[in-house]
Length: 104
Image (cartoon, rainbow, N blue to C red; front, side):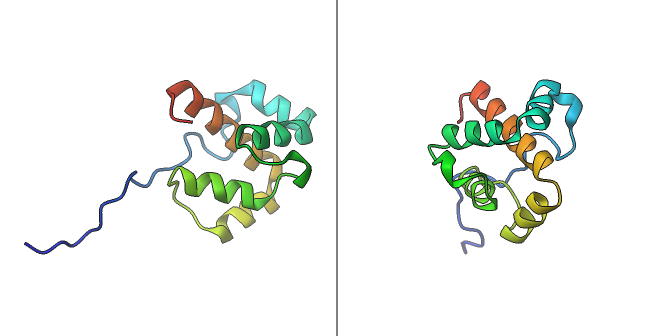
């Protein structure tokens, strides 16, 4: 029997909410709109990263890679550059949902 696929620890997935899924968590969206730097530092803290480095495309990419979320570095760059608040809110919602599920 020939092996055609290599085993993966996690099947590829998607972010648990959409990029513009504001209504799924209005509190997070208000937090992002009112104090974007604070929310970015909160995410950095959750990921054991340095808040002083700022929220970058790299953090989104590292998170996506850690949880085997489909996407590319170019996609992370475009998402973050075109709509940084939406991108950051999406990441915060995903972090919070994974905490609730016990997989963060």
